[in-house]
Amino acid sequence: MRKSATGTMLGLAIGDALGHRTEFDEIEQIAAWCPDWRELPLPTPALVTDDTQMTLALARALRTATERGALMPLRLERPLREEFVDWYHSPDNNRAPGMTCLKSCMRLSKPALRWQQASDVGSKGCGANMRVAPIGLLPDLTNRQLSGAAQLQSALTHGHPTALAASDLTAHTVRLLVEGAAPGELPALLRAHADASRTRYDEFWLGDLAAHAQDHSAEEFTARGWDECLFVLDRLDAALARPEPEADPCQVTGEGWIAEEAFATGLLCFLLFPDDPVAAVRRAAYSSGDSDSIACLTGAFAGAHHGAAAWPQDWVRRIEHRDELLAFGALWDRT
Image 1 (cartoon, helix red, strand yellow):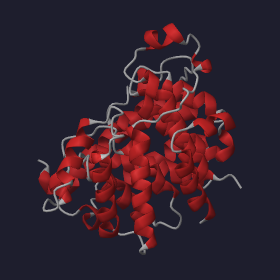
Image 2 (image 1 turned 180 degrees about the vertical axis):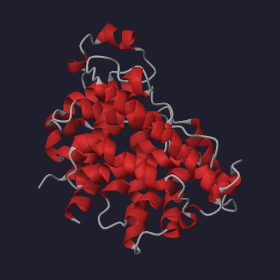
Image 3 (image 1 turned 90 degrees about the vertical axis):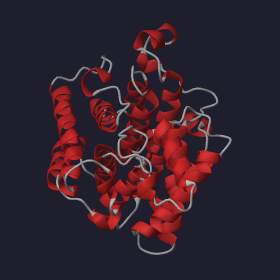
C-alpha cells in the first residue's frame, strides 16, 4: 500500500520546512551558503511555516465535518472558521503569515459577519491553495464536493476567482495522483478540468460571493479566474516542452506569490523530477520566489504519487507536527 495520504501530508510539511529558510532569498543568496541545490539540507529542527499550520487547520475542520455526515458547505464552514480564528490567535502564528489570511481571519472572528463579507475578493495570493491538499485526500467525494470544498476553503480568506480556481486545480491534482494518474498525464487532465469548469459558478458552495466583486455576472467572475489558470497552464506546457531542471523554476511559471503561479511552479518542480521526490522538493525550495509555498505544493504532489516511502526517515523524524501529520495520513489511508 502506497499510503498516499501519509506521503502527501509529510511531503507538504517537508517542502514547507525546506523552503522556510530560502523564502525571500534570491538564488545568489542561497548559493552563497549552499552552492548545489541537490544538497539543500532540511533544517534542524525542521520547523514549518503558516503553510503547514493552515493545512492542519483545514485537516482538523475536514475531520470534524465528515464525522458529522456528508461534506456540505455549512458543515465545513463552521469548523473551518473556528480553526482559522484559532490559528489567527495562536502564539505560534509567527511564521511570516500572509496579510490576506491575517486580515480575513480577523474579520472571521466577528460572529455577526458572514464569511462572504470577511473574504478578500481582491486577493489571489497563494495562501489558499498551499493549504488545500487534504481535500484531495478525502475518499468518496463527488467531483462537485471536491471542487466546492476546495473553493469554499479558499473563499473564507482569498475570494478572488483565480484563488478559487487554483485551489480547485491543486486539490484535483492531488486526487488524480492518489488515484494513480501518471505524472505526464496531468497537464492535459488539468486543462480539461479547467475548460469544463470555466463558467461554472456553484452557488450552493459559494453563496453570493461573486456579488461582492465587480464582475457583471457570476459566470464572468468564474471565467476570470479559470482564464488566468489556463494561461499559466500554457506556461507550464512551454516549460515542460523545453525542460531546464538546473534553472530556477520561477523563471518560466512565476515566483509563486500569487495562486496560479504557486500551483504551476510547484507542479513544474514535481514534473521535472517525477521519479525523485527529494530532488523535486529541493528544486522547489531552491528558488527565487515564494519558496516554502512552492515546495509545499511540490511535496504534496510528490507524496501523493509516491506515498509515504518517498521521504527519508531521518527527515520524517525531524519534521514539526510529525505526529499530527501522520495521524491524518493514517486516517485517510485507512479510509
